[in-house]
Length: 56
Image (cartoon, rainbow, N blue to C red):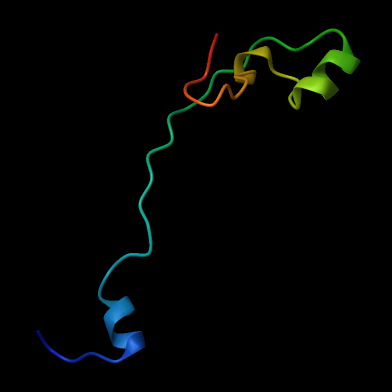
């Protein structure tokens, strides 16, 4: 293995790669208090954390 400096090593590789699919958000919460408590105005994004997997 070659001995690279810190900058040379990280310049050789991309920092990160991600795949983010398009989201088609069509519904909106009618009750703003419910949206505030959920953390989003879009019901499609309401996926409460249960410690394992998202439900809904």
